[in-house]
Image 1: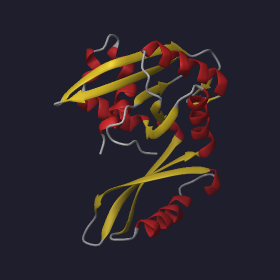
Image 2: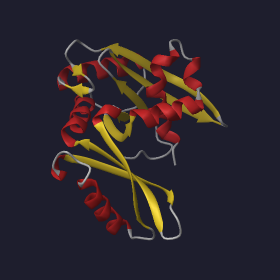
Image 3: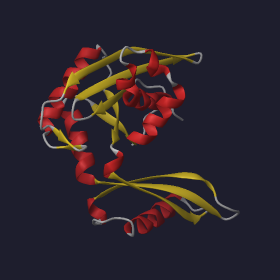
Image 4: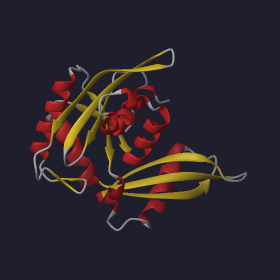
Length: 201
């Protein structure tokens, strides 16, 4: 999933202790955080990155959203890296998008310990690899794990438009650094990185 650049967007970080939300604005290169919020997650709602109680997580998401004061309902989420399979693959350059997607699915099958129909796939082109090939980053998750996060935010009245990996969102936030200005800023680093998708493109 990808966000439309410029539209308001909330970054939402979910873990076993809390849900944290961040909304960012950028003007003339200056980043500000007009809205952020946090709410506790009840014991047993999440376990090792997996959502065990969709309704319980939805409650925490809604509380964090409400506490932030934001009216934005479009959100960016992330999957924990322990739940993802990532692999760099090499494919022919210059393929039409439809053919590239078919080849990605064929390559992905050899890295998955579960059936293709149970997988949620995404990929991005990293760049050229020689004169006639490209490197492609393949990301695979169990569809059920992704869906439970989507169901939780939907039950909270929100709409997910981005699904990222935690590592990539943390990397983006670390490079930008604005979260350090928030009280308890380190706790909001992941949500900050996800909220930056508003200006990705």
